[in-house]
Length: 273
Image (tube, rainbow, N blue to C red; front, side):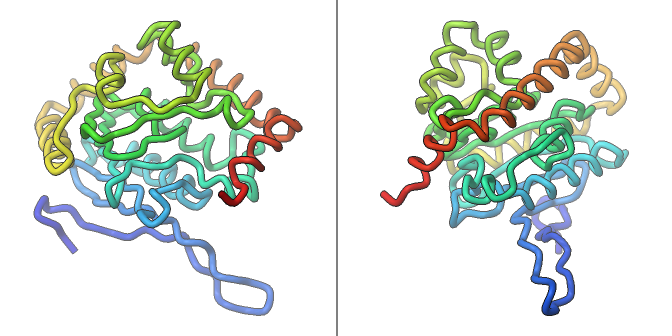
């Protein structure tokens, strides 16, 4: 099926194994993919504010890996369904399937973002929590609605920053503002994100995706090799340092998951309100 932009629209699900006494259906991935020169990857779990499950991390990592190798793909655009970008980790699913190392789905996605060789663009509406904010540090362009709300609540959950945010964020917004956003873990507005350089522009919610698609279409018309070379020149100086920082973040994050402090904080968050 094609939409008005000429994209083939697919609802991606993880493979389902045959039903038997020993096997149950695999969970849905809740990722929508529109393939084309501008490939759109959408968080598609609106009833849960697009909270990300392990299956979604796997689907996104696989889709990015495929787009990186597909010469017909010029740009990738991230969007969310139902008025939100993503509420971050689905913590119930996350605690049932905690990351254990660099091969874990969440770390596969983060590495795919770090190494993606073509332009990455995001259109952020509503909530962008946790990785919903930190993944923007790997995007080359980001646009947000005036109702977008960003948050990195890692410390509040007894955890530590992820996604390269401990390295990239202070270099983008300064140590003082990065410390405020990461230490307190409080929500901040699209205006704050724009002043800090996390996003490129604020767009009315009903025009946001159209604006982002239009900018992506303009990028797709550029000479592709030159565009990739320009991104490489921009990103190359920090590549090794970012790799090392993300490795340290991952080790600390995994270690903290089993600490009494984190366990208690996560229990409080998940307790019925």
